[in-house]
Image (cartoon, rainbow, N blue to C red; front, side):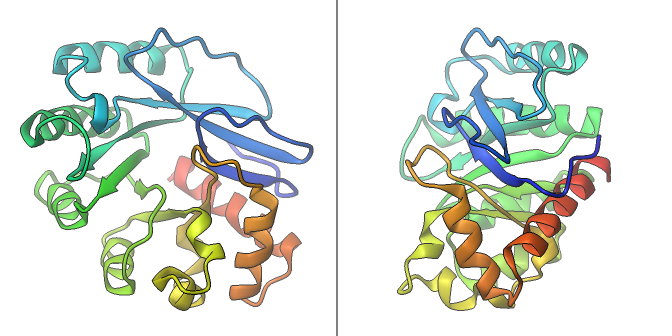
Length: 225
């Protein structure tokens, strides 16, 4: 699968629909009855969010994901992950997360990761489980050291509205990251993806058109290995 270079990519959203010249990757909650409709502007991922990790057993997670994969309904697994501030107990989150990791590795699909105050634990799991597929930390807003630790272990980082805040740590070092390892997203916030492109392209001393091509190239590399 390859995507056209002349579009704005919204890498991770929940309800947002694509505007003109946009592609949106919508993240679906696995515990719901999922109905996906093929489109050239909307694509899907699915996973059990760590806040909901007690709503499906590990076997049900596997069963539902495999059905979606076999029906070619999703292009990646997730979001899934670990959250120390909100959600069910840690062990339940971890078991659900590992179930997603195993499926992603089995079917060679990228993994979209929700990580809140759990970056070290997420990185440790990828290393311990020897996962070979690419992982993407969505809505990343950590330190430069953590960003580089992730990238050096094969991760991508998807960035959201924090880049608009000139006082944020991320805004300060963003232009120093390798541009071939990032995406932009709106998550569930009412923001315009095109505005994020304008801000971040300047950080990399790129014009918007070339930056659009770069992020689509990142997506093609993510999906095609």
